[in-house]
Image (cartoon, rainbow, N blue to C red):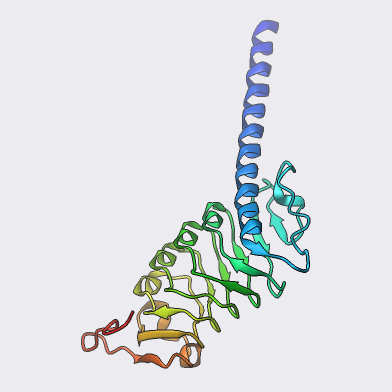
Length: 218
């Protein structure tokens, strides 16, 4: 009987150790993803100084919030005087709910890998210098509620994949260089027109079946 109890205790301890190692590996991979972001940014005010890749996990880093399982759920770097580029490795933060990088001087494109952030609720990249198209992959963000990309230099059409996100409540793409027509399907039915203003090549709400939204739009 004692031998059997010992076996059960050994198995339980082994399982606990295995789960702990899994969490450690996952936390380290998230730290790697965030450190890739740090390397891609210029940080003159040293707001990322605590982002030390030698630590066990990134949950002790400033501007990073984790859940009880030490998985990254928030990155809050709005208005932090950052410049540089968004690292595609951000797409590995599968528990991330809030990505707040507004009011910086970030350039380049929005990585399509952000479409892998299946838990994302808020994507705030407004007031930067982002260029290129809005990735169609953002249509995979089925938990997204807030999408604010205004005041950048984004081009191309508004992806119709976004109309398939039932949770989407706030979309602001004003003050870019978008083209085509404004979607009217799904959640876009309730988005005010001022959230599309100051896009000189963007035309009014599409008339279903009458207008091709991406005519001469690139």
